[in-house]
Figure (cartoon, rainbow, N blue to C red):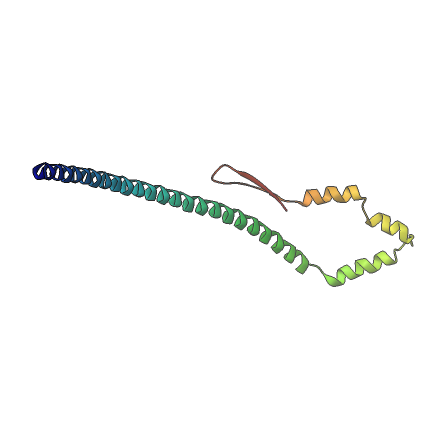
Amino acid sequence: MASRANIYIKYRTNFTFVLLHQAESELQRASLDATRTTRQLEETIDNFEKQKIKDIKNIFSEFITIEMLFHGKALEIYTAAYQNIQNIDENEDLEVFRSSLYPPDYQSRLDIVRANSKSPLQRTGSLKASLRTVQVKTSKGIKIILSF
């Protein structure tokens, strides 16, 4: 019976080695699959980040370009307004004001106010006429209309 026990132990040992070898092969295969999947996931994350950075760069570039156009146009308007203010002749303006207080034909003050004021509808029309409109088209085809 000792020989039968030896055969059983040898068979059992060989079977264990075969199972161990199969388990090691499966572990190696699973490890390679995990490495390959990790590498693909890293590539996907890298591509996503690259596209995100490119998109953010484009968005901010277009925003800054629009802002520069807007502020450049505003600077032109402020420059013209400053020059107009500097061109005001204070003495002449004071003379016009004094002459309106004492008109030569002595109109009533109510007539002076009526002559120098406009109705609300007339003021609105003149305001719209003085607005400036700028149309900007972005690289993505977005049309922006600025009025000031």
